[in-house]
Length: 258
Image 1 (cartoon, rainbow, N blue to C red):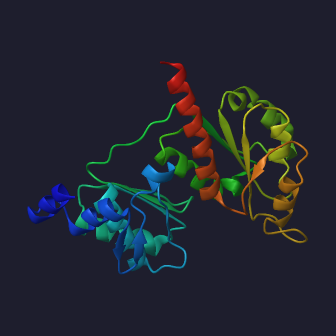
Image 2: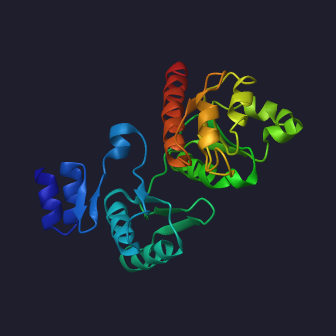
């Protein structure tokens, strides 16, 4: 603790960074940022933009970059992206800002950011192009956690030849995250063809009876082939779950290589 206090007194460490070191989180006007989440549970903290003003998101991003050199925002619309860019330009101009408009994510890396690496492969799969939003969210979470991600898109059950053509690639993955809307059949079919953990993401596509992802969720929950299932459009949750499996695989491979 003395070293922290001396660093703050010398101007080498900000008060926010010192608070993050001592408490594990840092508090600002927009709320508290969990600066210790990566060390504590092995996944990056996510800043959910939905329900917050652009200015609140930008402040939390600034706190994240100051204390961890890293920020990950989900469900970010154009106004949020603009506010984050403006705040980072003013407070941490040497940082890089990467925006995925389709997935609705913003990633910021500070100048001292040291990216993690995991010896694990996760396939992120979509039944159709309409499933790309939550799938993209999951992929960003995985990449920011150090996982090698392979995208396999548009292989839904309406044309099984497309899925069969990708089986070699799919079977080479350590974990699969599979996003599907409508009746949500793809994860069930695929789980009967591979021997790796599979996480289903029901997507809010479809209309009429069972629309908005309800039929997809029900179908995945009733899957005859064993799969894990997250909530409708919960790409972030799927990415986190796949990351935790990937971390266990990485630890086992590291141990076996000694």
